[in-house]
Each structure stands twice: as C-alpha cells, then as structure tokens.
Amino acid sequence: MDLTAKLVQMLPLQKGQGKNGEWKKQDIIVETGGQYPKKVCISIWGDKINEKALQIGNTLNISFDVESREYNGRWYTDVKAWKVEAAGSAAGGGNSSYADEMPPDINYDDSKDDLPF
Image 1 (cartoon, helix red, strand yellow):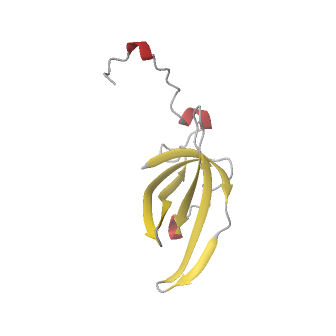
Image 2 (image 1 turned 180 degrees about the horizontal axis):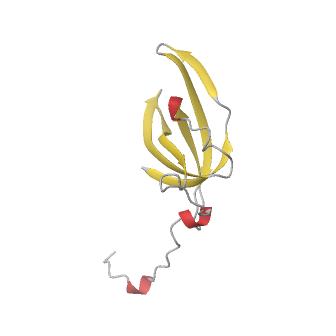
C-alpha cells in the first residue's frame, strides 16, 4: 500500500540485540490530508530508515504493509514501511505543497444514486 502524508512526530529510536544481530526501529507519526485528517503510527526497520527524509513537517511518500498477529488471545496490528522518501523526490524533486499531494474533496449527490441499497 502507498500513502502520502505529513510527518508530525518522531518517536525515540529503538535499538536492540537479537539472535540475528543488532536491530533498530524508528516509529513515526504521520497525518493524512483531506477533510478528515487521520494520524497513523508507522514503523520503519533497519536500513529502511531514511534520516534525510525524516524531518518534521516534510511530506512523505510511504510504501507499507499492514500485518496483524495474535498474542495471548489479543490481536496487535503493525504498519511497517518498506520504503520512505520525501514527496516529489521520485518525480525528480518538486516544490508541491502538502495540500497538492492530497486528492480533492468529492461532493456526492445522493439524488442521482441509482444503486438499489
């Protein structure tokens, strides 16, 4: 999945030692655009942490996977990024604003709805 969102907070970098060697994880909080913005916590692991792009206020293009797992009868969901870059960097750079990255608001006219439900 892909998401374009504004970086609003970076949580402390976490590091540790596992059976496969050292690991590090950076959790970030991003905010989507549109009429009803949502905040999402996204985890970035290991060499996927792009410190140049991770600046508060930057608009980011994030490619991620959503994964859930069960532990002791409870379910936990992670949003894990596998690619993070500054918005516009894939298109050769650009000066687009955060609002330009979000799709326009759509006004639906229910009177023209021809669905039976």
